[in-house]
Structures are given as C-alpha cells and as structure tokens.
Length: 376
Length: 195
Image 1 (cartoon, rainbow over the protein chains, first blue to last red):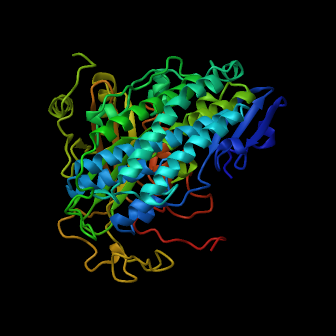
Image 2 (cartoon, each protein chain N blue to C red):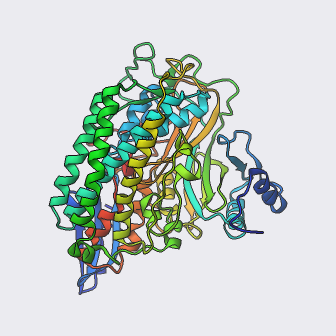
C-alpha cells in the first residue's frame, strides 16, 4: 500500500486517529475505500482509494469488434446501462456516419429517461438508508421494479440491457409495452409527491443534509463535476440542452438547479430530475411514429475509416463522454470513457476535510457513485 | 469582448492563432470539434492560460492518451485466443491480416489529448501533444483545474506519462504489484500471484 493511504504511526499526532472506511462498508455503495484521519470528530485528511473493480475494459475494447463493445459498455455504470449503450453507439455512429431512424431515436430517449428514473430511485432509496430512513428504500424499490419490468419486456434483461445497438435499437416495442409504460408513468406521478412527504422535507433528514458538504460553483467547476453534483451548486450544464443528441431538442423540459450546493440540494436535484424525465418520456411516446428501428449501413464487422470522434451525453451521474479512435480495423483503436463517477469522486479529498465524521456518509451518499464506472 | 457570448470554432481558432502562430489544427481532428496540435510540451501551460483567463474556458472535460505504436502481435499479450463471433475462430480484430492499415499515421509516440470547454460560450477545444512512448513528460494542469489530479494519475498509471508539478503522481487504478502500463499497445502481462 502507498504511504498516502496508510500513514506510519509516528506521523499521526497524539490526538489523531486513522479510520478505515470500506472497502466492505455498506455505505460505500461498492468497493470504495476511504482512508480518514480524524481529530476528535473532525476529518483532517481523506484519501479515497479506488481500483478494486478495475477490469481494464478500455483495453478489452481494443480486442473486440464494435458490436461486442456495446456489451462491455453495459458493465460500466450498471445502474444506467442504457446511457452507456447510447454513448458508445453515438460515438461509433459518428465514426461510421450512420443515420439513425427517428423512431429508434425516440425509443433511445424513452429508454434512457426510464433508466435515469430507475437509477435516481436507487439513489433515493439508498441515500435514505444512509441517513437512517429505511422506509423510503422500500418505496423506491417498488417503483424501480416496475421500470425493470418494462426493460425486461422490451429487451429481456433487467440490468445489462445491450438494447441500444449501432444504428438504432435491438427490437421495436409493441402497443402493449407502450400502454404499460403510460400506466407506469401515471402511477409514478402520483408517487412523486409522496417522496417529498416521506423524505425530502422530513425534519430529521433536513437536519442531516442541509448545509452539509457545501460545494461552491467555482469549486465544482474546478473539480470538473457534472450532473446533479454540478447543478446543485447552481451551474446549469446539461448535455441534453448544451449539445442536444438524439431527439432531446424536440422536447420541453427544465434543468433543476440547486442554490447552496449542499447534500440536500444534490439529493433534491435528482428528485426533481425524475419529474423532468417523466415529462420527457410522455412527450417522446406522443411523438412516436411507426417506422424502422435499425438504420441501414451497419456492417456485421464494422470497420470505420481512420478518424476520431468524441460524443458526450447526460448520463444519470453526469456528463458521460467517449473519445473513440478508429484506425480502419474491426476494433476500436482506442476507447476512453470520461466517467462522471470517477471525476465526481475525486472531489471527496477536498470536501470531506473539516466535516464531522457522521457527515462523511451523507457526503459520500450524495455523490451517488457507481464503482463499476469509477474503476472501469 | 463579452466572455459569455457564444463563440464559433473559427473565432476561437483566430484568437489563439494571433498569440500562438505555431499552434495549428491537427491533421486528424476529433470529430467536429476544433482540434489543435501543440508543437512542444512547454506550449501547453501558456495556451491553457490564455483559454482560461482570456477566453472564458472554465471546464476541463478530460485528459487522456492514445498509443500510436499500431497493432502488435498478440503473442504473450493475452492468455487465451479471443473467441470472436464476428471473425474466424481464434482471430482477434487486431490480428487480422495486415494489422497495420495503410494511410494511418502510426508512429513511436503517445498522443496526449486534453479537452476543455467553455460552458457559457458553448464550445469545446481539443489539445493534442505527442510525447515519447517511454519516459514521456508533460506539465500538470492542476494549477488551473483540480480535476486534472486523478485524470493525470490515470494517464500515468495506464500509459506511464509523467506530469510535472503533480503533487501525488501515484498509481490509481491498477494494483500496486502490476508491472508496466497496461494501455500501451506492447504491454505484456507479467504473471502475478493471481495467475
């Protein structure tokens, strides 16, 4: 182990204590280890250590065809795998110059927004648990189950979908699926106010999260934060508005912003994003016209010509970006994922300092990381 | 000049060219974005300083690298031949006949890529710099963007490029016992206690 994460005993002052958080702690949401040096109740140094889930997917992609890389992309952020599928496909389509049919683009939007709802629901539930509120978790998982049922109906998988393919989507959805989705949205809209009653404005929850782990807009930009982490600090940056992809340009929706940049703002940005996602899915379903769902011109072994592409989308955790380099062979020459979880997590070493030991879990929970994406 | 007004690629290119005539568009642009090639490592900090302080760039999207050595023989590279359903059994895309594709600028260099954005002005710029594959060095961007911390550590861990001025340039993703830098094209896996 490196010296930075395991201080030698003689470097600790007499009133300092080294606390090892993780990698098997339930509040770290995966295999994250944070080496905390505390002085009484106050954190004086925090060193996040990652890499426990490093599978080298960027290297693996260099040995596999483009269609196979979609499968790899599922394994990054496994809580919103549709967004990862979409990102890889958008980057590859830029290289291959493939046109995506309109129906497929709408379906991509519908799936990504449903996946955002599922992912934020998991955050909502687990953040509640981190703060000692167990009931919210059960509510969140009841609704998340319905979204996963919809995914199971459309592509057969509940976690790793491989649904969005190069040139479009794997399979069209039928009227039964659309009817069930509308039914879910009606059910879900009625549940959203319940979440506010149950958790958002619960006095104990407010005490634990308001004013905790404040990030200023300048700090957030310097640390390259994105997604709800950045927007909670009042910076409006959403790839869906900034550089619209798929058919996001056609839909009306708001970008929720926070003011204080504290844990509660980060939490509430995500809750309000679920409202917006419902709006987007409703509009996309209304615009859905019959047509093909897979574009023509995608080879079985695609060999895009020598070139580079960069695509970025608004994933559930932030600005997902992909730098893809092709040299004319059947596999990507180089694939780099700009993983928002990885970049958001780096911030911990600064914001944890000076916070109370009991708030560490609140701040860690509010960053909403997925270790599959942090380590890749 | 209004620092919040939208900016086009040509305007950005012109305002950079005025100060740095040797920073020219790269031969291989990154998609539709403005891509500039830095002639040497000491150009990076002044160019980024101009972008940040003069042109309203406030966001560092990513730091990454590409190894341009080209496809290499897979002997000793992976333990089992990769069964690939789209290709004849045992073949891997990089081991296809020819391997190297004509017209591609393979060279003995690592290409570092920085992507910076100006959120208010709605523009991204890609900066590229060639460094040697062994012992490559570049200045760290931590004075401008703290996000460079972990991203530069990642490039160091996976490619072996050292960033001057980085306060804690240590491994980040691979285990402490990993020998070499896995994203180099000629990386050969060394047996460890998990094999």
